[in-house]
Structure formats: C-alpha cells, structure tokens
Image (tube, rainbow, N blue to C red; front, side, top):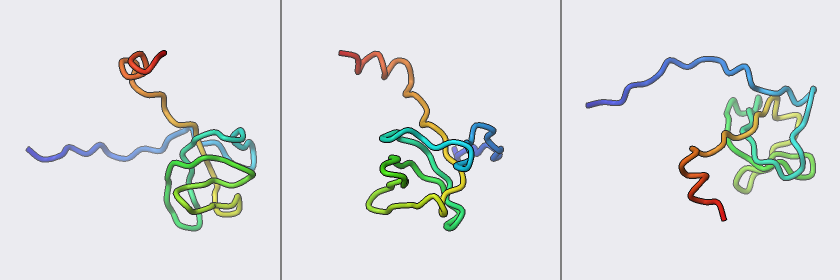
Length: 79
C-alpha cells in the first residue's frame, strides 16, 4: 500500500511579519521568501533561529504558531 497525499491547500493562518511578530521565545513555523522554505524555529532577539541558522526579518515573510500536540499526549505529559 502506498502513501496517500492530500492536495496542498493554502493556510489562512499565516501572520505577516509586517503586521505582527511572535513573542520572544515563541516556537513557530516560518516561511522564508529568500529560500522558498518553511521550517520550525524559535523567535529570539528579532530573528527566527532554526538549527544553527538565523533568519532575519527581511528573509521571512510569514509565521504561525506551532500546533498543540494531540490531547492524549498532552495529558500524559502533565505533572
């Protein structure tokens, strides 16, 4: 049995960096216009940090918060 791929759709939840930035320390998904890529990163001191790379605001056009984990996993991790 092969993989079944969903047709890609545009996500309306992207936030334009010109309108709003994440809070310091937020973990987000960002879209880099320079590299035509999206990845997860932490927003610190005005840049998106992904691995060892630092993406400046002139390289990133949009971002969105990470999704919450599945409810069953979140409950397992509660203290």
